[in-house]
Image (cartoon, rainbow, N blue to C red; front, side, top):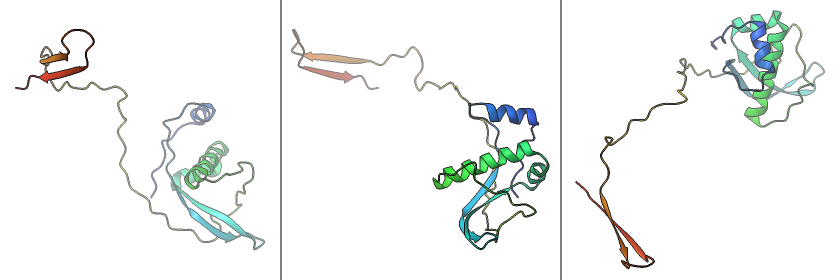
Length: 156
């Protein structure tokens, strides 16, 4: 079972879709491999199976905004995953069918929720403050422009 996405209202989804900034909203889905299936005229067609949460599927059946969002995410996902150019205006939504041909198996990785990464964190110093490293620098020749600098660190 694919986890359901966070339940948000239409206004929030519109705000996400209009924004140029990346969103933290995630739509869990699985994109299957390319396979060929005959269309209704018998001509071979390229097919990618997309698996989503069943509750979310029921939501997109009745909500055109969420359906449009899913189509956008799925088409972009296929384009990114398989490095394909996809014409976003030339696709077919099957009427009265949920699949075309045989459904391919999906291997769904079950992951727990990920903790949000801290943007700024304090790094502990490996040495105590106030303890300055001790060293000696020797220049050669002692006067004029140096040709060689030798650093002698004090090791405890």
